[in-house]
View 1 (tube, rainbow, N blue to C red):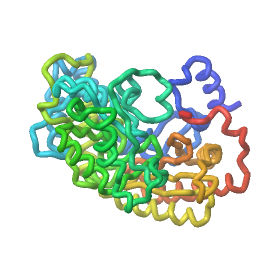
View 2 (tube, rainbow, N blue to C red):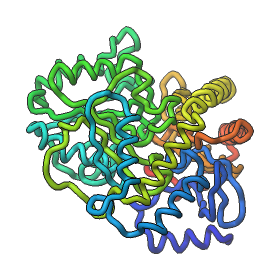
View 3 (tube, one colour):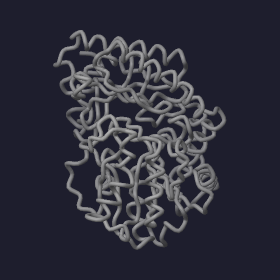
View 4 (cartoon, rainbow, N blue to C red):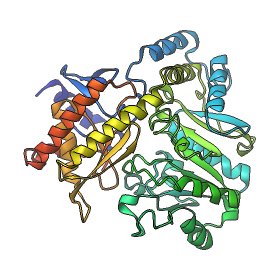
Length: 445
């Protein structure tokens, strides 16, 4: 039994199942840049970035130094009651860099979950409307508000009464309406919502906001048609409903632009931010039209502390200075091209999709029937780990490999990772990976 197996035995005894999402028996010792080193001393190329948290790479020296300085100066100070200029600068930066020339303000929290929950709590109070609309496949957090708004199987089991209505997202590879793009006219956007949802379930005059991801990630890296968000924007405007973009996972350069909504030119009324906003230091932010924030108390003790906002400022400075969003667009095109070429060699690959360095490979047993290859996907992810590559799978059917490497990944690291991935898929297709090897490592399913 190696060091990792011994620690995992201890982990299983003391950490509750809902607190872990493991795809292979990995215990990390350290991580730098795009390399993760396990407790046994083995190095791995990372194609996950900590669920996109490490956009500027693990243990980025500039972020570490910014945190070190602030810890020495202000550890323990709550930013809401005893704010620093660092916190004010961070909020000013978020206001200036997010889309929209209107007057905005920032609500600060500890995570993307907090940011989404703030919209759920605050906007109905400000608008005096009680209802909201979210989308199948959306993932907006794991507190009660997030559970109410999310539309994924991993959270659906939890009973959370709410006034949230959920509608299908634009998942063209598996259209819930059985239609084909573009002849469908993107029916899943305004047409269904206005003709069916608003008429039968969710009165628009009592709807405060719609929350949507410009590109869904946890449900399978789904990229909607270019007309989708603009149609939602028109519907929101028609009925005076706020459009909230959840950019927690896809924001800050990952998709090839600073924010995912910028691919369509749509300007949301509010934007929820988290994950890569501060490179792993717990920070979340909701940036919104100032009139969407009511007066009153909605504050947690340590939000807006200078340690987190210093990490956020350092992270954003690196992305902008090194133009990592442009780099993500360039590398993403090459990466996607390689994956599409691999589709010709591997019958398990049903679809390749994505923008920038947010990519998904959907595995199927039969391309015509699109039968999800759930077990095979788990095996591919596990085999890639054995060969030295860290990936995960997502989607309600657990059959989409999500590929979100740090934005600072080198071409050489990317090429080496693709070679491992190619071999891992081939090994599974040739039956070289047993069913039993993935028992106990089935991710979030």
